[in-house]
Length: 307
Image (cartoon, rainbow, N blue to C red; front, side):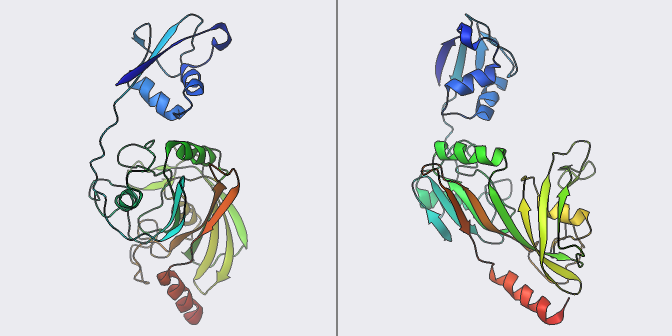
């Protein structure tokens, strides 16, 4: 462990202690600073404080940084569909069925196992030992573009864009039932369901604001091909939002029909476009992943049969 000491001068008096520390310690995110404060690693004259506490002139603040935790995850030589790579980021096209980061029941075969092997230890550490390099994720059965960060500076830079919803995220999906309108916006809070904590749902009381813009690309008899653009990025957002207006995704037996007549491996959802400001060049970049084979085959089937 190592620690740092700071003394509050007159110009800084009145700031929240988490704001004060995150402005001085620019190599660490404010959320990480808050985590240290809540764990008791930040003290004023030896006493633990809360993140919202205001600092006063002349006070001495001590922050203790824990030693890095050794990552006990095995790098695995798993092929990656790499769309772009440089010293800051790795952009991949995630296949169907691959879990993004290790979790109970999935400690191998994940995207993290694959990128650890590919990047040989060059990954950001901000999201903890189980999620090195992972700044955002997509569901196991969702395919498409995902960016992995190789250092903490790039991670913070892209995470800040995610926080203010400035990243471009466009998805393609196939949904049940024909949609009458050509486009629309769903603005409904999403949170965990009280009766089933594994499921998300529209939750006005405890949910977080979620906004999805959608437009119809093609109509079939009892289905539609749509594009969704995320304004926010809540868990299962597109799946929950489309189901809430009567258009669950094909193959989604969690939020749609319990029996899938199309015999899919999970929901028909593809993260097609991801765009953001590059952490080093400062320029807007955009990456596109072509539709996976299963999706194009299903589209052709729908076009032929009309349902």
